[in-house]
Length: 135
Image 1 (cartoon, rainbow, N blue to C red):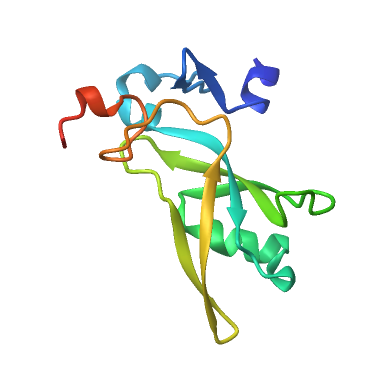
Image 2 (cartoon, helix red, strand yellow):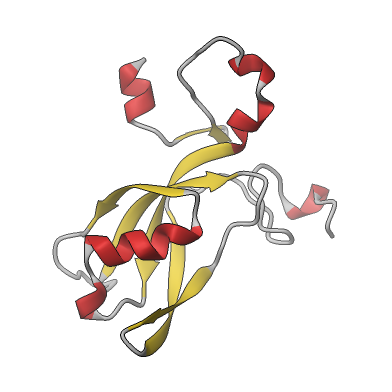
């Protein structure tokens, strides 16, 4: 159980699998299953913004930030950060955010890792555009 909870997020059949520690009344609380952890890459960061503190501030657009990873080296893709965030499954996935820091403004692009199915029409995980109600 500890391993399963520690190694979240889980994706099964290309859908988010929400795994929670059991406590009395959990099955009655459907809202508890509307959130999941997912890894998000933060791109288009200036070199001096690649810190854990700044990534936590940028991650403030999500419910919470659990972990921050600064990958070693730039590689061919360039510099970025990875944050493990808690997301609302009932809200659209963000493409990015505008950040103002030290007098400058910059668009920070989000790339989601091992992302489950999501709809390109409404941006919500769990279905695709063929069955979207927002079409």
